[in-house]
Image (cartoon, rainbow, N blue to C red; front, side):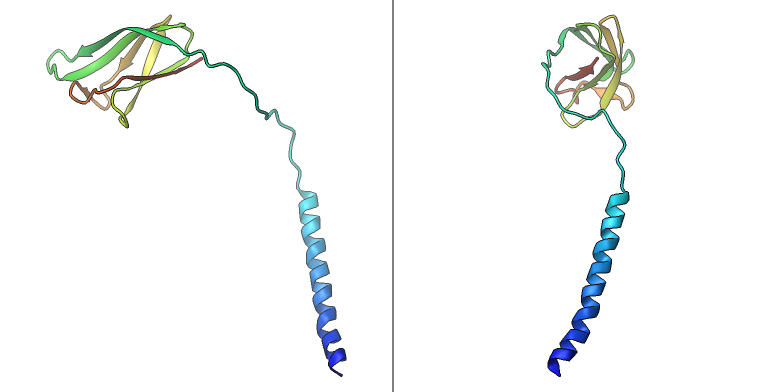
Length: 123
């Protein structure tokens, strides 16, 4: 009698497990991934040379920095940003044939707050 009771409970459980297994297989079989150009590789990072750095003071408030200018070699960088303090704001720069100007007025940079010069650039 106990054997029959176990069989009555086991059969519906086996059927439910089979249905769930089939349903999950059908779901995963329907997923498609489009082809992509993803991959990995390596290459040398040659870097840039920064020279002729100038910190340009505000004419009426000389404790404020209005801009930073410098020469970038090679000159082909399409994006250049600077940071004047570790963890500080990043300022977007314009690059004209290697002559870079970074407006540092929004937010306003100060002489006292300018503790480092970090330059990030990319082709």
